[in-house]
Image (cartoon, rainbow, N blue to C red):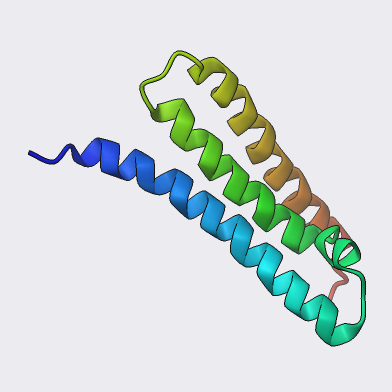
Length: 99
């Protein structure tokens, strides 16, 4: 019988790394198109928050899995999740208001 909880937890780390890889690939393409350095594009709030979200999913997967290092992965999950929230909060503060 298939253990669907294990499948779901395993899908989280695959999804997390896919998000990080897709963000990196998209920013590399945009940097080549615009002539801006890759790290300058990756250091902006939106791509950085998306990468942190992918890393949070990756760490959450290992937090929920059955291993002895779940507290370490839990701290990393909280760190990356907090970074996403912090970056999104900064994004709403800096956004100019429309009239």
